[in-house]
Length: 208
Image (cartoon, rainbow, N blue to C red; front, top):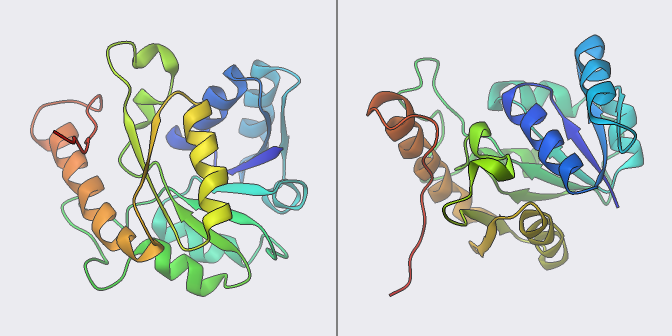
């Protein structure tokens, strides 16, 4: 299975590196072609760089590693999305990182699904900082990634990806539950950047 990662920022680059470390075939769809080509050259033959539209064309699972505000415009440029699994990792942050543009009554993931009804959107990784995607950053405990989707097959594909990357994949129900997961991601940002914990914390749902 080929996975496309759209975006070469902190999260996109860290995801590509983590996938490459597990021997996955990855196509990086970078808006900055030079940056994408440099990262692909660094990581070896299992990773290649392409335009975002070409990356989507050759992949069945597409990770949208973009800020929420950039996603709507990018979707329109990606070409046909019929049958694609779109993984939304975003939190719809306000400009000052102190709140969410959407919440409790809808979510970024639901907005993406409405914009791309021919695809299957899955929410995942929105509570994980880029610094924790590398396996060597997670030697003390297995972190949880919450996975929400309406399509069972799409959810299972993403849960398998999460597990391969060394996380515990937690079934978070339907895509509607993204409206609750995104505030959890916002709280994690508060802990990481405003309450002194640093970008090395992640939430967990513990059963006792």
